[in-house]
Image 1 (cartoon, rainbow, N blue to C red):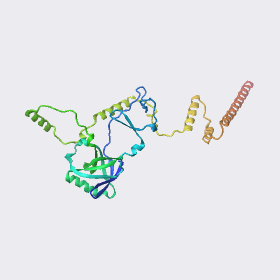
Image 2 (image 1 turned 30 degrees about the horizontal axis):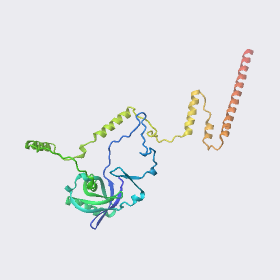
Image 3 (image 1 turned 90 degrees about the vertical axis):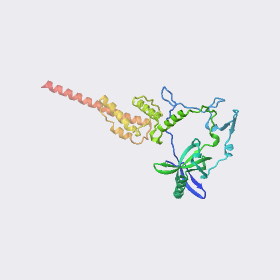
Image 4 (image 1 turned 180 degrees about the vertical axis):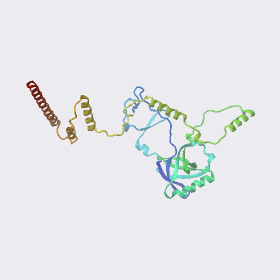
Length: 321
């Protein structure tokens, strides 16, 4: 894991240097929007809703929409005036009973690791939280915004670690706008409900649960790959990682073509020359290639004449005998 933040937990006069790690990661199945015909990805353009023209990223500003639908444009100078903090302190405000924190308030979870000389005070804080069976309510600045969070101890395979869990602000928790009004349950119905609870009672073990949807999608994709149902696009095609020697490939192609025509491969000298840096002009290369061709033609013509003379001499010798 890679630390995403460094700072210190402070409670009283004690300071604990720590590193912050993301404690969770999403394995949710995600799909891409593609063209059904060829598998090409769908692209989106930044288009102004008023004039219909595409807007460059540099021309995009932040806007705050009011309840009346009016848009207030905020400049970089406006944003700079907003309160922000870059404090590296996790300040403990108070220690509260665990049951007083509604899990609905929890947002993101992070592991805290002691850094440097912080191992001993880290262990002290961890033990204090365990013994008191309380959570530490803290304030911390993440991404230049101050938020509230809690510190608690969690048992993991690596041992007991302190977990920081950021929380929603109170006004971010919605109040249901409905009421559940039912008649009081009958004693026999309550008794049966208690029996059902006892029947299904047990300890929580996260390993007993599995994401069936993700597994089904994975199996479906694998079956389609095995069946050859794949759209090959430029963005999805991957190379084998091998560097192709263009000259060698051309030489092999020429040799294969000559072999198919029943011709001998006499261009080994030309191939070795071709490996040298090409400094001559295209015209010189052309003339250089034509010269050997004329010589080869002349050699073949001479060979044919010699063979004809030998054949005529043999015929005369037979007649004389």
